[in-house]
Image (tube, rainbow, N blue to C red; front, top):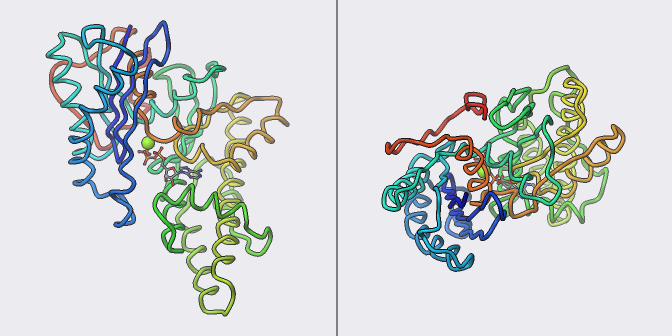
Length: 341
Ligand SMILES: Nc1ncnc2c1ncn2[C@@H]1O[C@H](COP(=O)(O)OP(=O)(O)OP(=O)(O)O)[C@@H](O)[C@H]1O
Ligand SMILES: [Mg+2]
């Protein structure tokens, strides 16, 4: 089955062609980062308008790249939520219009299920069951995964998502958006031990997270540095390192707890923050001790992309699921409400 996948939940227009027999045939992405950078975050109205501009050229691009005719496409998959409603509507309308015109089915995909399944596109995909750590700009969740659509939420952030905390900490030090890669880069030159940030909610049982306090801690530390005569560039590096270490260690502690609680020893990490090298290394060390394995996608499939939507949609279409012609999207959508396949 050849599926054209469209992703438009936030500030990336992603389009990909996935074939159930041949795998991923083409993948294209337009990131709106430059458009939103001056505002220090995503402006929903600008995001929607830009998706409208980019969608059809990107679809043409992937069809050309895969040397594929529209008539070969068996189905459409699009992100139906969670995300920005205006942005989601662009992908949903486009997918439904093409599906109607081409006489093929369309399926709405849950964005976080897309992230969760992205490591399945790699050479050594994880086997069910596993624990998944979803760490993105909008989500921090630990999920027990027994199969596609068989999700049990084990814990989640009570306030900011991990990626959001990276972005806000970067912003308060005057760094560019998105902050995750900026902080990761600066942290490489940070002096270990100059600052020590708390590991929120690790001193009590449970699998929930709270990252908003770290951002306040970073703000106070940054203000103290600005009030003193020190080197502010070095202060940025040292804060970046201390902040990243705190996030990484907190996530590692909670992942270990989730694995112990479920008795599983395979961990999947997905979402933008799963591209973080320090996080990958820390989890790999922990899993090596537990004689388990950690799985993640290549960096460009950690952040938003069309490939994960085409893949997830294809699995649901193969199981016989698809939508009617109504264009429905959801800003909020609990992943546990998805049907199993
Ligand atoms: N190397 C990195 N280290 C830490 N964070 C990173 C890194 N690369 C990207 N990020 C963070 O990942 C986030 C973007 O990831 P993603 O595209 O998955 O999130 P989103 O789509 O905005 O949110 P959601 O998927 O929850 O709707 C940003 O917060 C960004 O700062
Ligand atoms: Mg995302």
